[in-house]
Amino acid sequence: MNLAFQAIGIKREEVYIANIVKCRPPANRNPEDDECFACLNYLRNQVILVKPKIIVLLGSVALKNILGKEYGITATRGHWIEKKGIKYMPTWHPAALLRDETKKIDFIKDLKKVIEEINN
Image 1: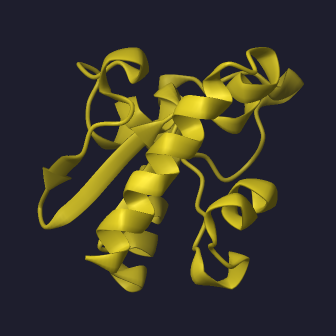
Image 2: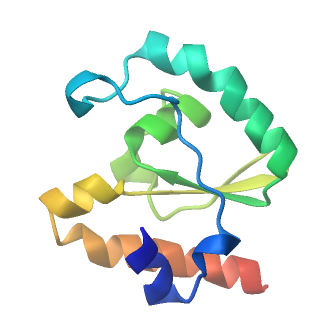
Image 3: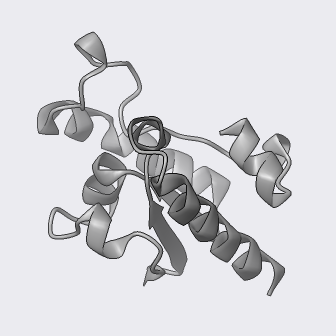
């Protein structure tokens, strides 16, 4: 992520990073619904304390647990979604970029939209 931040001119100390689950699932698999549910109140409290104007959702797990199971990352990435005064930008998870380098272009475009929004 640090390289992505550098590429678009964001300093790491300007970003707050939080995860859906607070511990890594076995074998680095996606967290199961009950694991996400167990950690969501902690994440909600983090959001309340940080008071972000923008949240970048990295990947399907973040998107579905924050905005709802009806959202899909392929259809919504790159599009702003606003709820309760917070703007959300869904984009690819960095691990997806390692599996498919063509997604890097979309990822950088999405982060540039975030920068544009910050600067408005």
